[in-house]
Image 1 (cartoon, rainbow, N blue to C red):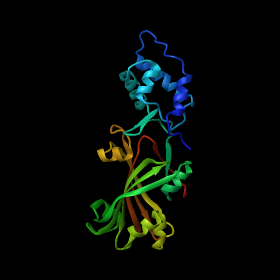
Image 2: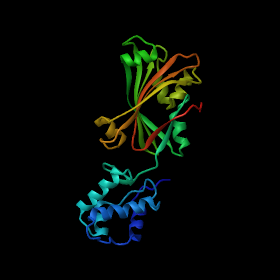
Image 3: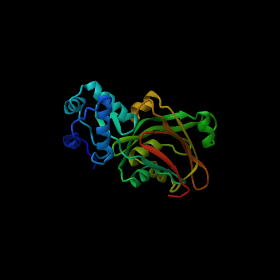
Image 4: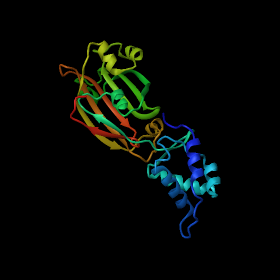
Length: 259
């Protein structure tokens, strides 16, 4: 279980020596060095919440502007992350997300000893955009079942995905998904007990404002993008997905393994 309060880090601060006040070294740099050592030493576990700016300023006997500058440097170094409305946390270890012939989100996350979860943000019927139609072997504008899904690992946003399924094959897909809360289990309802990845295109770009907010990552950090096509045992396309992964905590690992 990951720490979720500032108590643990507060105890670490109490064990730190006062700032040496080295001439010629800015105070913010000395604060940054002290916090960096606490984090890199392993005393502050990933996910530990830092004390407030006020508490840090009082501990180091500096002003809050100095603390803000130090924290900005730590964030730029990916040692901490800032969540609006929640606080500042020691950065978690990176998730190695495996992309293979049988890519399954929940299995991937559990393999990292984390708990997967997620929710549909929007859903409905949509005409297939040209890229989706080509991937699924549909006519341009042919109806598809669409859903936008936000996925989490241990409660932290990991990916934001747009999934498209051919409506003529999956009438009622969304109702079944809401009952089963799993794409794999929903495919099984329609008689598809195994499916594989036909192709995955991986790129990177800066996030949109919506993506940055939903994934709780800085707007100046890239997201990793996958465009994927899944097929059934007969080789028929059953799903097109475009996913934005949180670039701060996810790295994509391409594997030739089946599972």
